[in-house]
Length: 327
Image (cartoon, rainbow, N blue to C red):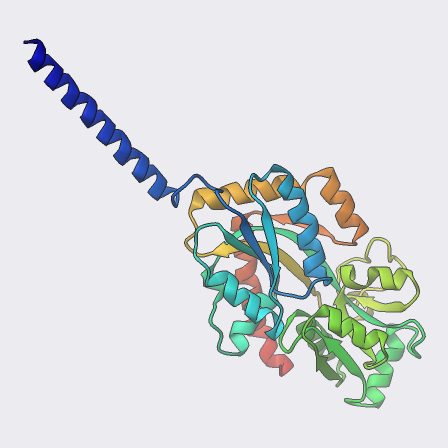
């Protein structure tokens, strides 16, 4: 009797162990194996170190790292106006161990202008963290002291004035072309591989002007090396209240760059939520706010849903506007 009882008891225990093991395996499978995160997370920046996207990314990631149990590893993958980095990001395994920053509208404009190995639908939105307004900039010692002089000169000399940008069809190119369209002028657009190079071209007097984001040129303006002729904003920028908006001068063009975090499509929702909460907490931290202000990075939070809607809006803007601009 005792022997029979022990056999039954052993069978029950063994069954419980097997069920527990199956449950553990299922739990691990549902969560991509070990509990997330179990190893470092690569953060792809599709532009050179030192540019506005890179600076903002490093500030935010350094704050997020304080509450994240595994290392974030920033990987710069510049080239082809961001296409190289975006492709690597979105073709990575959708397991939460590769995420990255995108720039809008560049992220949606590139696939509309040429064949690429990624589409906007390949991205799963995490959150937006910056909206960086556009500005038209010349050297401080240039002959153009205001926007009116620049436009008048361009009208007298079609295609003579040169404006650098961060790549053919990229965000600053679109902003510059839209301004030229609204102002009724013809200029020569000079593409570079990113904002760092396009600004260097202006500083070296290789071009007449550039369209940049305020974060990329604010310190150079404050140091009296560059001058802003106009801003692509509804209202005058804080800290640059003496600079007119293009809109108040009669040019109805608003332009800037949203910078956002995304993951490859198919990343588990619980991982997306974990990353969102981590980075949102970092975004709202006093340290991030102070460092971002010092870098002239205008913070703007959007949830994953809001970011997805904004991506679709930018896609529609590009489809409607770019054909008119001839780029």
